[in-house]
Image (cartoon, rainbow, N blue to C red; front, side):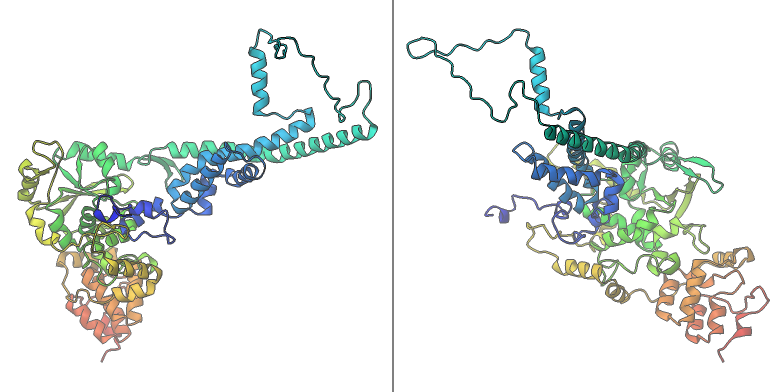
Length: 586
């Protein structure tokens, strides 16, 4: 305790701390973002252990209550520790597999021995097996030495006392004893038959499940089977194809910006430098990457052009980068507090109703690249990014960063700008280019709750982080405070593209816009339009859009907002009517 304040001991990591805290979050959004760090559920135990999770507790009880001794106590300690830690972190269920199997084996072995004794009057045990083994290996009989007294004369052997419980020679057991033995053996035989016949289907199912899980867990994560819309079984090889494309079509010194999850794959398969990988100890670096991806497109490009030549995104749905992006925003905000003002949990960055992105997400670099030419009205800035690769099934997209800063790239590559731990050492860490100084000056190094070496602890951030996790409504309200307030007209060619009849369609976007105008929710509508001005020009399948609905419901303030971003009142819907033909504004 006296040495702790001196700084000689490092802090307990957030991952370790997460095994002991009562709540399910550690206070570190980077650690909290990893699915394997979440608490284990009953379904998780059943998925990985199957029937063993029901049998193992029986074995635990048998060891603890019937066969407890110094050796068996190891099973109890191992079992308690494995269950406690796996319950805190789902990835540690792996540690329960050996002890669960051992305890299940104890239970099944004792039940089998009990049934076998009823049939053969023999109970197998480890000690019996050792005795049989020793007898079989002894070729020379051992003769006990004859005892002698102090003078050297042989002692007279004492007659052994008769065992009162043993049946005397020639004496037959009573009919009652025979009947009782027969009934016990018959009962055990019946029970053994019932247990065996009822357990056989479970054993067969367990055997098949084990092989199925082994096969499933042995498959590589970047190559798997799936079913197409027609029901045909296909091999999805999008990820490996993307990495091979990087290897074969980019310069050897190309730098790839991608979320850290796939960093090792890009390095190992694509043989290209990645901005971040699974070594996530540098929290501030991961936060900078998160800021670049979750910032507005223009700001994200300003960061990316000094760090990377290409941006790689997982875009295939499910757990792709867009689904992870709220975590990216939280991590970025833990260091760059202006990302989500007043809300450490970044509730304003995510999905609203019907899967529609919130304004902050809709305006982010990640969303623009992810949904480029897939969602009506969403396009990446062609002056900043160019799509160069899209995988067969749309799981991966790669964009080339335009206007890359050659000066920053050369500065980073220059060995003189690296910091070595000693002169001439091979361990030399790089530095950020000077062009990013303005961005880096805004950061606030993240301090973990358990870092007792730091004199200044960010208590206010941690307090608000947990408050907002437990009260999402409060987080959402506080996250609404502040924000941008200027409107920008989108490029004319993009607006003209949306007005084409083939691009009229009912989407979650148009449904959300209709709901906002119907409810006269001006603050939220303004956020959407500021984040992505093109949404104001979208039109549903009948040719009507925000300007039509604003006139229909008499929302004069909304009409003025739409005029600021260039929405025309002369466009006609499918019936040839303009917004002014059905207006309630006079």
